[in-house]
Length: 104
Image (cartoon, rainbow, N blue to C red; front, side, top):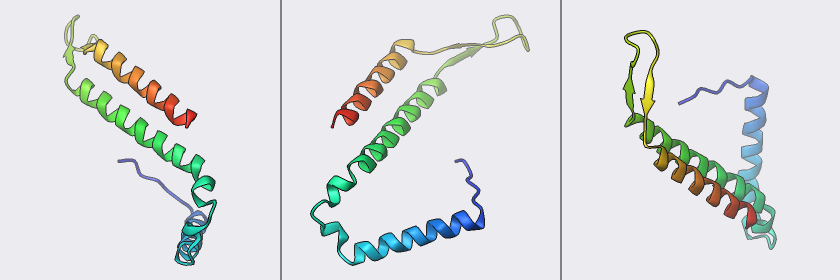
């Protein structure tokens, strides 16, 4: 997992925004008539992030099963063989799902 570093000011800003959101939700803003509509783009971004994470995990799994050879001998480079058709299928599915999310 990657590590993220924040300045004290950025950290405090995030804490203030979380506290504000908590206060709004405690006050019932999630029952607001336009609540879902106002978050529509945020939901799309979240869905796209999940889709990309899933694609990357599948790609890692595929590459973990790849065969690695040193065709010219030790230290002269490597050849990686993996199921290219499966990767193409993964990518096409990712693109199709991405397009569906954007069209919603």
